[in-house]
Image (tube, rainbow, N blue to C red; front, side, top):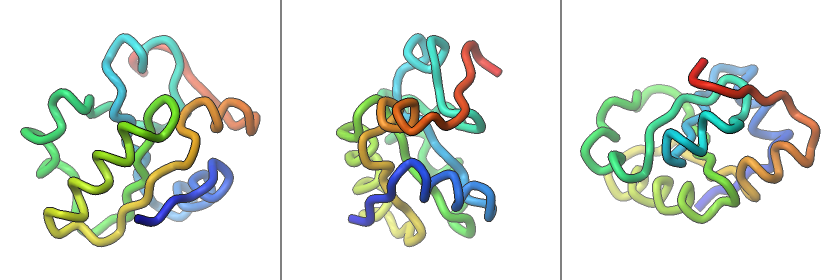
Length: 104
């Protein structure tokens, strides 16, 4: 499984990658990486087909464990351009990268 740093994830997003946050809605509303799209792990198995196969996807959660599960699920289902953000939202914040609150 490919893991990327928060800085690498930001660079990939600037190049068109999508950042997918697999935490639950209440966690996402507290704080999330700017530009992240919410798709809770609790709904992931039913909804992963909504994600495009022709774009790079970077998966993020709080610390990297749940997003690793989601990354593996996508790889097991034929997605090829998928990475896990090592350290999750905690690492993103620690790196000083932009965050948002709420559902926006």
